[in-house]
Amino acid sequence: MQETPRCISCQRDIKPRERSVKFFCPSCGEVLLWRCEVCRIHGNKYTCPECGFEGP
Image (tube, rainbow, N blue to C red; front, side, top):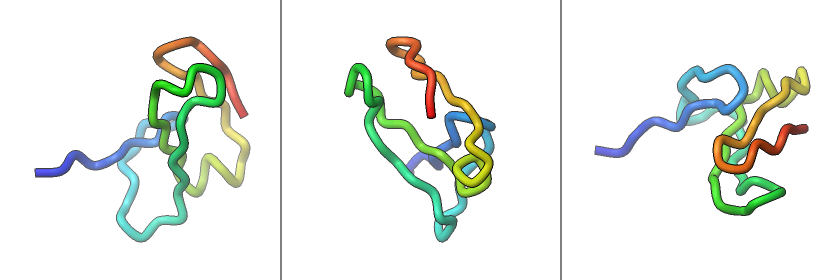
């Protein structure tokens, strides 16, 4: 069973057809981060759990 991705900013589950984005941390490149459509539009901040990088 596959785990549902969670938004790194708001921690809610990301729905399958949602216009979300996934990317590796721009600083350490170790952690795959997901951001939901709402957090992307509003520019909500996120923090990498591995290195502490804060974005956007």
